[in-house]
Length: 131
Image (cartoon, rainbow, N blue to C red; front, side):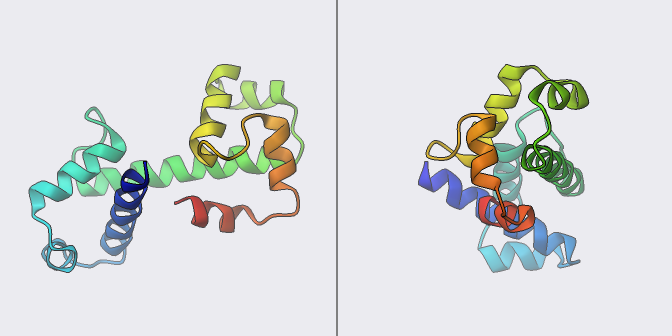
């Protein structure tokens, strides 16, 4: 699990480098990886049916980050679970799965626990710590 987290953080750093206009060849040198390895790492994060290019992967991760940020803000702002489910057109099972995905195995497991955890916290800082 820790190795997976390290790889995820590395790929996020790589994507941030790409967003800041660093050339792909320079990124490959910086991280001492091949283009094939870069695509394999992207594939691990976005899945085999996900984006096929680096640019698509960046967009995918930005959209996912925005979605997570909005859900966390709604939970923090005490939005009722039913409204969250309706707003994002998801099931309660999916919402709880997202909470576990966001906070990991040792974090909050329910909306109530997430509310307590998020109380008086900066969502952007939490996202930075998570990703």
